[in-house]
Image (tube, rainbow, N blue to C red; front, side):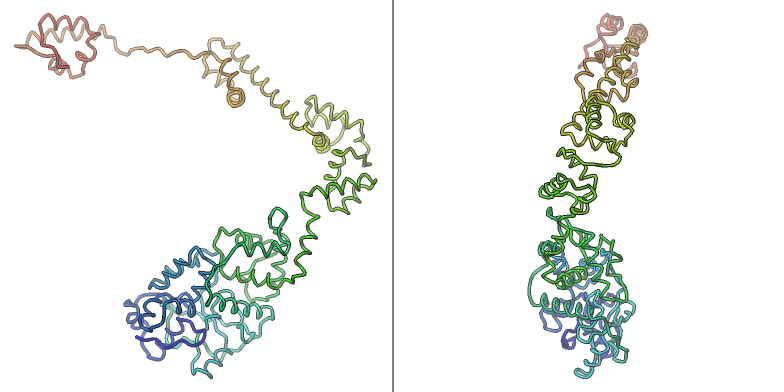
Length: 527
């Protein structure tokens, strides 16, 4: 079976439909003649079976794959799966091709349908005598014709195998004009599809990151400013005026939409890459320096120059509120900076003067709890913590105090338990002082091992009274030997007694029995 020649931008699926429409054959017969099986599924833009089509039509497999399907688009944005996509689409397994393109794994998805432009259908009928399905219209997420600025119409697909005679675009449908931005997006997608059709390459995540960095959407430490990034992207997307939003972010706080895309660790739908690239291409170049310079001073971790600027303004006698408005930093940060630099500031209420701060630091060095200090001076615990943090090394010193205090408390608990229970063993001390035992085992194991009682060696107590067993076996052996004619070995005699091995392995504990055996001159055992 030889398929009809492909029109400009026609899909392989469209050629199948035209074949069964012109020749009037049933779908099952057509599939059997082409693929040697009547039960299969034909995808509208990821049409498999290219190898069989190439053999019957004489076209190259690569040309059909690149020009009549969207397999090249998915291979470009999913380079790790490019080989799998190409090999599965050459085979006759449509489900394998869909899985290779990761369609079932994408969070953003749409109901499978086929799209057309009514104005394109009219032009196709005038020029070629029949309408057909255009490849550029089938790009997932593209809802506008790149030639006529009208919304594409979705045509529901019939049941498997999705082929049906006469399933071609209708020319009598009413066109509706789309937004200008959505039209430009469709033109951008068409130009992008044409570019990757005739040139080899794959998507580079680093180029996308570098564009965002140049536009000021990353910090100095290469972290994304996700609020600014998501907000600007969502405002741009709303201007598309799409009739539905299955492929679009839901709100300005939909951070996951771009975070997964920019991470480069999760496969994403090609439409998301197209939309992001189109948005970046629409940002003016003069905008590249503004976001970064505007957000640089509002970073949560100021650099050294900003700290020096804040300290200089405070030394000039400016209030905390004024310096906060000028620099964008919080009052808590400015207050801590003033304490560290010994800059006098006037704050209300006037409880935290220099003398009070000195007393607070003195109590902190003695190891008083911050709650006790706050209660003593009638101030908040936050103020006490701020003063303690302003003194270099005081926080680590108080941590050391706390560690030493806990060690002394737990050691005293272990020693007290040893005095109250002098004959106890190590495991009993562990049960009595469970928390102290485990804490000292981690932090001071050497002291714990020296303080605990030395372990005693276990004593073995036999569960068998061998004296009684010797008397019992002696009488039994005496009766056996008297009633036995000829010589008998220890092994044979032991089997007569039950085969326990006592006469062989434990004969050193059976002196009376062994003496009776020797008196009757038994033969030695082979053991």
